[in-house]
Image 1 (tube, rainbow, N blue to C red):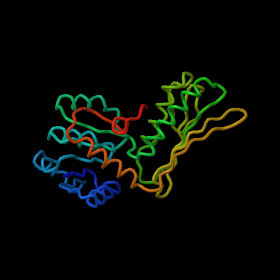
Image 2: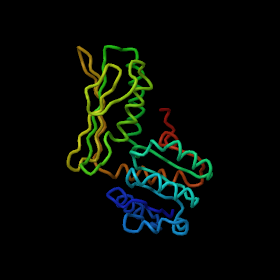
Image 3: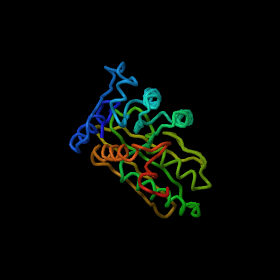
Image 4: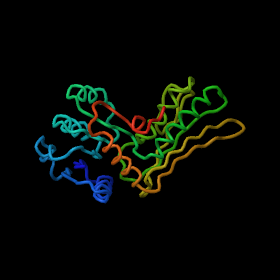
Length: 240
């Protein structure tokens, strides 16, 4: 598989390393220093793009790939205000986009557990719920895309919760998300249900960034030859 890497920070470098170890070819690397190479001609050298850049760059990068007829796996978070616009671009170009807030297989299993627990808690009004996420200090968006995905799933399942809020004291219908930026932490997400008599905690802790990179590579292989907008639930067959 010939891969274009768009965004060559820590994740981009790990993806490139694991891709080459698996026998894939890195056809193109785009970073801040060579943005002028993000052209249809250069992108045509690849079979699929993997995009891990910055929130302000993601939509432009995805658009460039779609216009070049290149399927794109996007792992950048913080741009979802433009998701409907991007979905329309995918449809118009008959292209393919794979987006996930987190490419770890374990995290996506955690998403399914989170949704199931929230369904159970819908009938247990004595429990309130809060989220905490911890990431490395270089992560720019807060809350993390993974935390937002978790919180939105809870809102969809628990009738007494209408929205989530960041870093503030919540009203009764709100779910608080507390974001911590600490050292080189790859990513930890914790959901706590608390009642007057007990607490229930579910937690996912990443030990390294390699899990995210491996999931992105698997998504890239899965996406080639497809058309439409997809996520990890499609690839893994999870009913979440």
